[in-house]
Picture 1 (cartoon, one colour):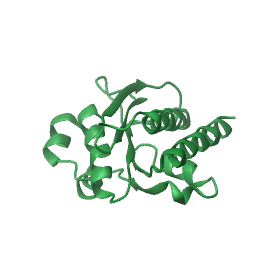
Picture 2 (cartoon, rainbow, N blue to C red):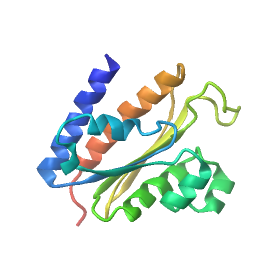
Picture 3 (cartoon, helix red, strand yellow):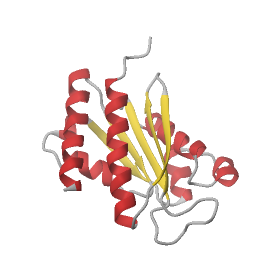
Length: 168
């Protein structure tokens, strides 16, 4: 059931992007490429999807997206400043993408702490030359549930970003 909702949401994102001649890029950590995989599950998605970055390790976030090491050290990978840098880095590293979505979080079952519990996820969506939206979520459930909820919310943020008025 969740997979059907995600595919339907992805179809909406692709349609909105096509209607506005927008291309997108993804930057994913805890979802491991689920957003890109869901979008590209749909035939013809290559006219919208520019590409995706799976940056699970801090070193990958730094090398592939340009997330500053000092930012990672100061805030940790699961933080608002880092997810913002991931979205901005994905746009900067993509020559043709107009919008980006980034996700970082703790899907579990381990890796959480009192300050950053399992289920903590940050999602950011950015539009080149426009604004960047960032959300903090605390999802309940197992690893699969956290990743699925993150996927669905990321697609919703992408749709919102695609439908936004172009910056003036």
